[in-house]
Amino acid sequence: MIELFDQVYNCAHRGASGHAPENTLAALKLAVALGADMAEIDVQQTADGQLVLFHDETLERTSTGTGLLAERTLTELRVLDAGSWFSQHCAGEKIPTLVEAISAVRGCLSLNIELKADSSAPGMLDRLLATIADQDFADHCVVTSFDHALIDDLVSREPDFATGYIVGREGLPVDAFRSKVDVLSLEKSLIEEAELEFATAAGKAVHAWTVNDAEEMSRLVALGVGGVITNYPDRFSDTRTRPTG
Image (cartoon, rainbow, N blue to C red; front, top):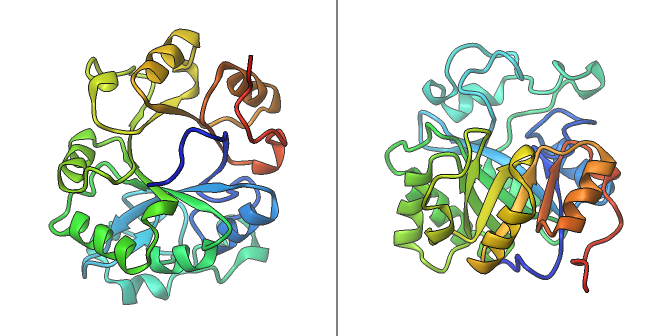
């Protein structure tokens, strides 16, 4: 299992998405160059059962495609441009597969693999676990989702696998600290000293999202978060270890 408690992760949100098109290999490679040690990526399943990096249900915002990603095959997605929406300098970036993402970051970054909330498609967990096993990457990733039932299913199948709940401004579910997940990925406004104390007592790391202000990063690190998820990993403090005393 990935080590979650001996350092504070500088986690690049969708790669270094403040500087490059999100969820692309360019964003992941730039995250490495800018000092990140983890990257959060969004993973969905195509119509032909392939796992790819993409955030939205529909293709329009961050590619030249239209319609639902889940209704497109990998071959259909490969012809799309996933970079020119961000900048003409990024034109030609493709929607990558999870295997390509792992290959691009191996030895440089751990991954926070977010399964999208509507991604409980038939066979998706099987394919995810098979991919991570085939790539020998289980010790370098954590799998998270807003779909807590999906994560609970994963935990029941692979209890030694690092997993986490993502929680937005609606607040923590009542059973969050009693759950079997390892990480609580919380919207930054939810994080105060009490939440961190409860999480520590429950043996869970807390990762904060999405934090782009350097002073806010420092505040959260001082409180004791285990990871800061940011579009700008270059703004993160050089501190990688938990404060002591």
